Image 1 (cartoon, rainbow, N blue to C red):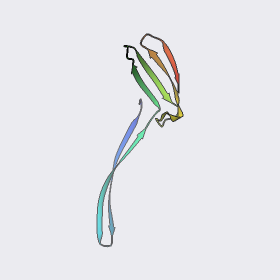
Image 2 (cartoon, one colour):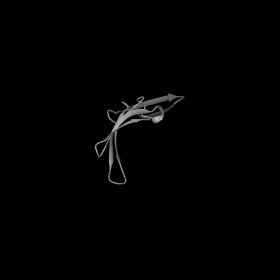
Image 3 (cartoon, rainbow, N blue to C red):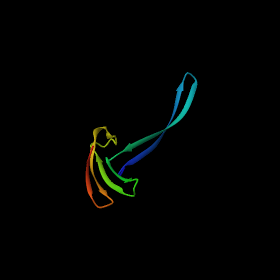
Image 4 (tube, one colour):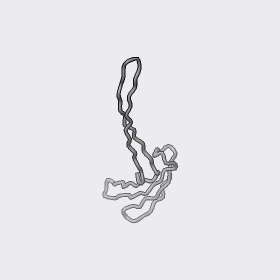
Length: 82
């Protein structure tokens, strides 16, 4: 995905209860998507499609669909809607 970012953080904590204590750490990972992505599809006979696509929302899931444009290796442009 073009423009995607990932954030990583660490949390550290100690808990005390009834004369006992526990210490722990956790890693937190967050991801942000723009919804833009590029793809190159390779055909079985030497052709290819170079695509610039945009999801309908920024979740990165195809259930909401999207739009884009692909250029075939022979120069044709193909509009994509899913």
